[in-house]
Length: 207
Image 1 (cartoon, rainbow, N blue to C red):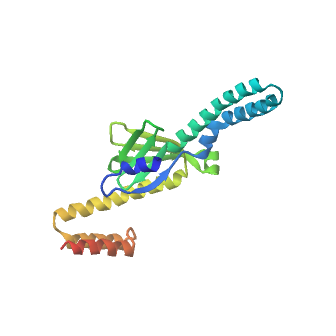
Image 2: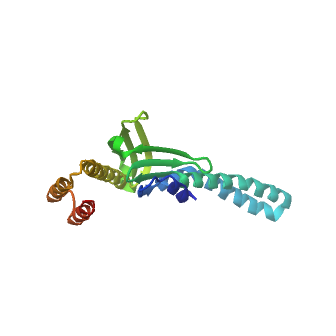
Image 3: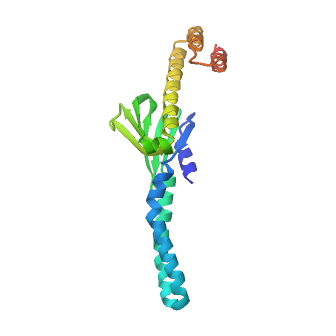
C-alpha cells in the first residue's frame, strides 16, 4: 500500500533511487512500553482465566487496547518514508491521511549529517537539508544508514546537473560541443567509459 502510493507520486521519467525509514530503534522506543503492558496484562488474564471467567473476559478486552496502540505505532513507523528520486527528495507520512513534503534537488544548497556515538555504532543519524525554498530546512531525524542517504542525494543532484547541461546544449543544437564536454568529464574521471559512450550514442542519434 505504501509503495503504491509513493509510485503514484512519481512524475514522467522520474524514478526512485533510494527509499528508507527511520531506524528500527525509533520503532522499538515507540512500542517498548506497549509490549511490556501487553506481557503484564497477558499474564494477568491467563492467571485470572483459571479462577474467574467474567473477570478474565474483561481483562482480555483491556488487553486489546495496548495491542491496538502497538499496531498503530508500527503502521505509523512503516508508512513514514524518506525517498530520493532523480529529481527530488520526498518525505511521506500518515497511515490513512497522507502528508507529503518534497524538495527539488535543484534547490538543495547543502546537506548536513549528524551522528552521535551510538548513531555511528548502530548506523542511524539526522539529515538536515538546506534549500532555497520558502521552507528553508528539512530535518529527517534518526534515519537508517544516513551516510548512504546523503551520498545518494548528492550523487542525484550532481547527475541532475549533467542532465541540465545536456538539455541546454540540445537547445543550442551544438551536439559536437556537448560530446567534447562529456569526453572532458570522462578524462577527469567524473564519467565512466560506459556512461560516456551511452551519452554519446544518445546525442549522435539526435543529429
